Image 1 (cartoon, rainbow, N blue to C red):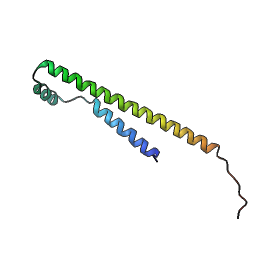
Image 2 (image 1 turned 135 degrees about the horizontal axis):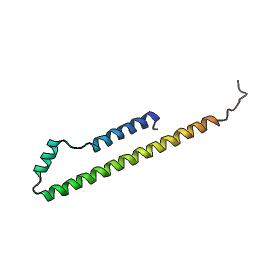
Image 3 (image 1 turned 180 degrees about the vertical axis):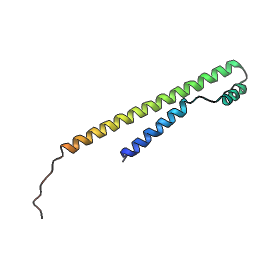
Image 4 (image 1 turned 90 degrees about the vertical axis):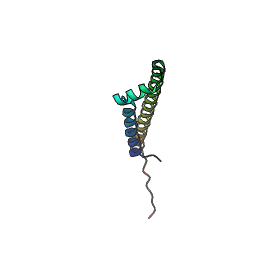
Length: 94
C-alpha cells in the first residue's frame, strides 16, 4: 500500500525530473552537437526531434504529478469523512 510519504517523495522526484528536462544544454554541449551533424538541415531536424521529445516528457511528468495530486486530495478527503462519521460500537463483553 502506498503511504502519503511515498506519494510526496514521488511528487518531489517528478519535480526534479521536470527541472532536469527543462534545463538547457551548455554552450559546449550545443557546440559538440552542432559539430557532430553533417549539415545544418540535419542539425535543425535533430534539434526539432530533441525539443519535441523533451516537450512530450515534460507533459507526461506534469500529467503524472496532477494525477497524483488529485489522488492524494481524494484520499485525504475520504480519510477526513471516514474519520468523522465512524460509528463506535459498544460491547458488553468483559
